[in-house]
Length: 248
Length: 218
Ligand SMILES: Nc1ncnc2c1ncn2[C@@H]1O[C@H](COP(=O)(O)OP(=O)(O)OP(=O)(O)O)[C@@H](O)[C@H]1O
Ligand SMILES: [Mg+2]
Image 1 (cartoon, rainbow over the protein chains, first blue to last red):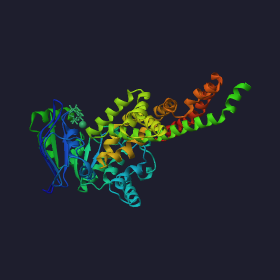
Image 2 (image 1 turned 90 degrees about the vertical axis):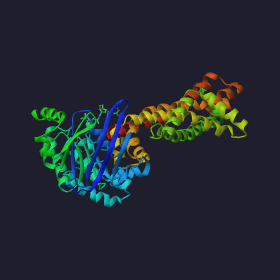
Image 3 (image 1 turned 180 degrees about the horizontal axis):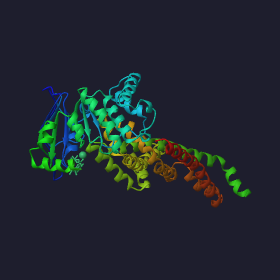
């Protein structure tokens, strides 16, 4: 579902790590309710792109606007922006010293200053939604990878974000756990969440994405609807990349 | 043996006053340097370059200055600026200034044991730097910090004896007084060593306790 109402807009974004040009003139607009899947070879800048959107990675040139506002440089306004953009990491990054429920309520209570009781209630509802309600009092290390990643999604959702960023959310998982995480993401997409998803899960891209964006060498090489992209990739880089991952 | 005990009982008030001051110095400078050292450690890991530079300069300057020089500065040089502080507070400040450089490094290396993803996830939720540090990073860093922290505190307890050279009557000053009284130095020094062992014991017990406690919890 796209709305023609842009929420995330990158315009002429450049980023260097020393001499390495990691984002090279990237322009991308993501509409409210749209699901964009970013794919591309390792080192092409997908993670950097994802992290630039909530300024975990500052950019060197160009502009990024979120919900009509340019990204704040630092301080309180930046913290506020980040609280409105959920992020899910490849390595889960659940707070190791906090219980599952605390992981999900910490943001709302400490950042949003919500009442603990209200945060707890919504936290439990979210854990229920991702199917972990019965593990609320455990610690992250006691859960499987798939469960941890579902908690990480619940933690991000607890902030009631306007958009969600996923950086290879299933890459660190054992194969049998990939499905449970993708299911949660698919249901989020159906509910109209705006999502930017870096993933190599072509099934998810086909079924849940509105658009596929292909990156190589820091450049946004190609973008198209998933069916079209997988059937008729235009660039040689994309053809080459798809032939490699689809034959495996 | 009777002679050995007599040295203590005959001079009980001197021993008592000396060790009370040692404990006071230790407690005041201990709290002071834990607070200042943690603040400096926070500066060293902060996103603001000026604060990082200040923290690094402080540590490099103070850590490489002999403690006696830090004392001399406070006791002899600072009064020249028309700031008059008594010997005892001066000693507390000198110990705090010196020890906090070491605590800062313990905090910084403790913070470095916590996976970067932890702080990143906290920032991504919209936490401020202070929240990231106090809610997420420091609690997880504490476990790694306990052993080096105790070493620094034990070193500081022993460093309190330097104050004797700057007119503070603490345990380190006892031998000089005793020499005047003509007491046998061997017995005097042995009693002082015993005194320090007794003071260090609670620190060792505390370290064991904290290490046990955090070994099971995450
Ligand atoms: N903090 C950093 N410092 C220096 N170079 C970096 C840093 N982070 C990433 N890079 C480099 O920038 C390039 C792009 O990295 P990025 O992580 O965005 O790629 P990616 O497309 O996500 O790759 P992957 O599929 O392996 O996750 C890589 O060559 C990487 O080595
Ligand atoms: Mg990546």
